[in-house]
Length: 313
Image 1 (cartoon, helix red, strand yellow):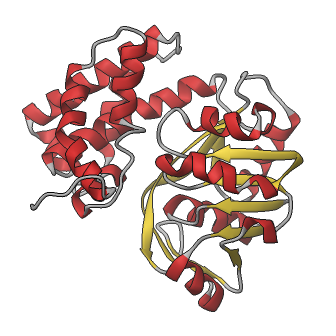
Image 2 (cartoon, helix red, strand yellow; image 1 turned 90 degrees about the vertical axis):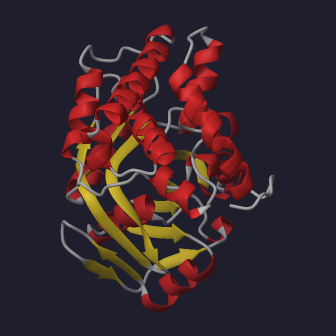
Image 3 (cartoon, rainbow, N blue to C red; image 1 turned 90 degrees about the horizontal axis):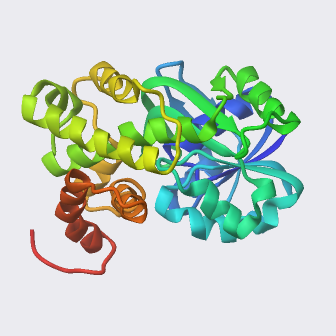
């Protein structure tokens, strides 16, 4: 398959690298020093599943150089999805499939609004990985996996082709019966974990062990569950228990990408995670006081990171 990885960070770099290893024709869209390193020395992936280097790689910052592809895997941050959708138009042919792997629950809708729903699947991944340096991806936690499906939850030949593509690359892949339930199940965990971690500046070991922070996590999760119910999302009855079990399995010093970005003063996925809980809750008349407190506590730092507010720290 001809695959374009739009956003070659921790997610796109890892899964794109594995797909290239399996013999697919993979092109990476990146920028700056990262792009230069990819073109000069290739893609280095340091992984719990085995390190590898891809060299040479086809990398560019100009999607129009690639022409149309079979699959676009969207690996940018959630707040970059709309701009990415506009920029990736040259990649989209009549049968191109677009697979978003962002945190949050709004990427498929955002992509569909620009590229057309016919091209877009629902998707998510589970992996702890990040850009360790130019041309260097580090996979540091979780068994890497992908879940994907049609937005109407029907089985399709293109979903089966993608399932086979990931499986041949050694990636755990699932086609859940309800992709929206799968997305919200992850959203319930990652938004509470990221938000509480960012506002407390504490790693997973502290969040789960300290009664106050664990309670805060549980209450944030319960609000997300209530929003999902109001939106007719069919989450499993034990979704909270599953999310807390995931928290209990994380490495002691694990932190979320949201937490790391906030603490580093970088733009984060606050709006797509905690902000989305508050916004979507208000739309269905569900109160979200814990998530509102977390969002209100972090929004000044987010605005500062985006250059929209200035104050000393």
